[in-house]
Image 1 (cartoon, rainbow, N blue to C red):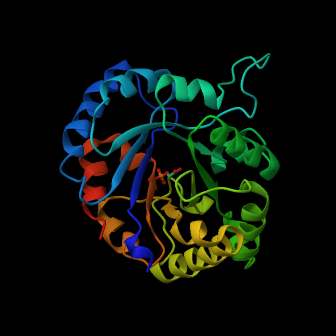
Image 2 (cartoon, rainbow, N blue to C red):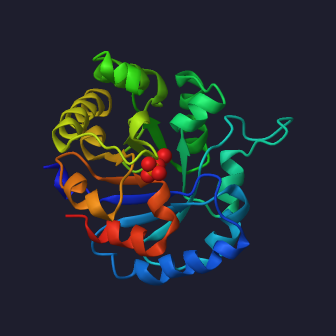
Length: 252
Ligand code: PGA
């Protein structure tokens, strides 16, 4: 049933990309119309490139721009931080919150991630909330418990299918070339779907659940075909237009 949800292929450029990356982005933009029948595309470059890319992609069909993080506050004395309102002002339509690199590098708690997701909604952005277990937690059989705790505490209340996306990203699969089996992904995404339906009813049934962690053209078709996988959050492979577009073309 969830295969009727339109997939989202989101690229997380992380701390990569200079002005010279405009050519790669232009290639993504040029190819976006060819995959428009398959998926929505979202590119999340570093903050320095958001306004330029948003300007360039104005009027594009099916490709929008997002941020990689936002502060919970709308403005104020928070040196170095960027608010959701600022991202929206720069032309972003979405923002990733709670990525495991931010949870680890900046000590972000579930509560802070929820505040950020609420800030995204306040600013009219779609929040992509990331969850996922570490290798130790997985080996201890705690995957579902960890995911449930993160869902419980990181997701904002009253979200809708059009302003909240959940990304399941096992920490051990990010940037490692390792991925869970399709059967594991199916079990965890089913678990997340049940949670979302319990929390948000009909909207929870229609929300996108992305898989993230070492998605590349070689494995995208299999992962994207898994029930309740409604797209992907892609790091490394999203830096190359040809790979990013090939993954989108593999959506069922
Ligand atoms: P990766 O990163 O595709 O390079 O594994 C995924 C992510 O961190 O979102």
